[in-house]
Length: 112
Length: 113
Image 1 (cartoon, rainbow over the protein chains, first blue to last red):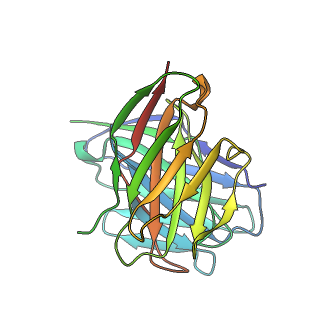
Image 2: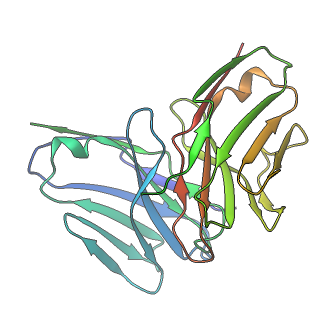
């Protein structure tokens, strides 16, 4: 089955700096890669996703890149703000309708 | 904005008891899911449900688990005889159709003692 690895497990950055979180996956059939943000006591919220027919997608301060050959994808957050502090999960699946296989999460702390 | 709602938010139950977790998916959604997250660990897929039947399930979803959509709005997860290791946050999720975003509820925290 699919195995998603996520690094780092914790990340601390200064407000205004960029944060990068990386994930690798094992199943070449995976073609849908969402990123979720989870705040304490809440459910995961989708922040951005990418499908395998594109290499990069951007939404304001958030961007995701995908390298299908190397089977890795990354989340980039620029100009970080304290409210970006949360746990971020990457996931992969063969289709956006199939079960999501999540990484272990990255706890991001943005300090003022 | 429409959201997936779950009840209860927290339940404590004795080992061996049956538990039912309830979810109201977003109203026009057709695909429903249960995931769980053991404290400090990643979110794990349990089961997906479409057209009144299970479409996919994981190894975690054994005979102790069942799902039901009894009345066209609620989507329930039943654990027949809870074990200590069932203690986790259980998330319900739903989506409109193929190719669309999966939306998660805020979770039901189950503690088995």
